[in-house]
Length: 427
Image (cartoon, rainbow, N blue to C red; front, side, top):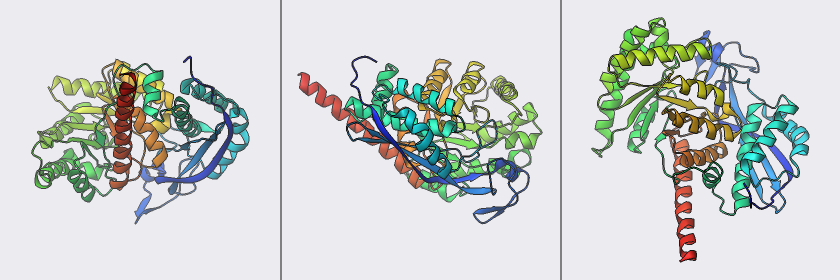
């Protein structure tokens, strides 16, 4: 972009921190690691893990600019790191040290006024250094987006996105999607009482939660539907029911497409009149296999005149992965897991790619992220008009919902205020 002021980085500071939940060794859990309260008993099986469940970590990256402003972002990863094509987990103290000693010298003097140019240059440095990973790209790009909004004088990260990508629509609110974690009943009550538009995720991560033929999951959907009627005083409240089943429906059906469609239709009937979205209904061993399997399942559902909406998750880890799923029309929506995509410009591109193919974009991420990474991605959601946006981090509903809702409302109100001021100044 031309005409932007110079605003440069004079130093980079990094501090280790916590994430909003845990890093879990999914391979070990699937192999039988036993749950013991909040912990798991068993041996880790995924490289990078020292135990099956470990506290989620983060690294705050602070860019000290030449006018004294400190822009910040958080390096973060997802709950289930190191599986499904994802990078292995990082350790915060090691990563913070590497950022300050290896990356910082390359970033001093970088002009941050144009976010995309700065993000691309930084991504190149991270790749040349090696072993820093997409978590570093993710955290530094958040700080660069913050810095660009400061350099522009409006401090609205969403405006940086709409301006640099020349997006035609104004910044606008989008539906928020909340996740229950394992507290699948009390947390649903919280969501209903707070009028969440998309719920509850459900963490359906075992075959027992699906049941033979899907009856256990059907009963859960029926309970959700009844609870909405019981708790909501707003007759117009008709939330979408979104369940993440971690491939467990396919596990119950032995991967049979027709039998999987039978279960999905059973859930659809249980959900009526609510729209139902099913994330990762069936698992395949590779990206291309996953695309073929999801395409076949979607085709089968459409042949049955089913309106179940399928969401791709596993194997859609990069902007290129997202493109392949969208181009193949393998699903109705794709979860864009922001830490997996690394630098935030890839998240923007992936969302716009989905929209170009008529595929819904779920701006996701992870319960293991931070408040800072959440606020940055919230701006991307309202700038690009995603189909729905995850309330994160954590699994308690209240905290993540508060962070996303408040950041969205602040940005929308400030944008409206600035527009009114601009109009008054030109009147």
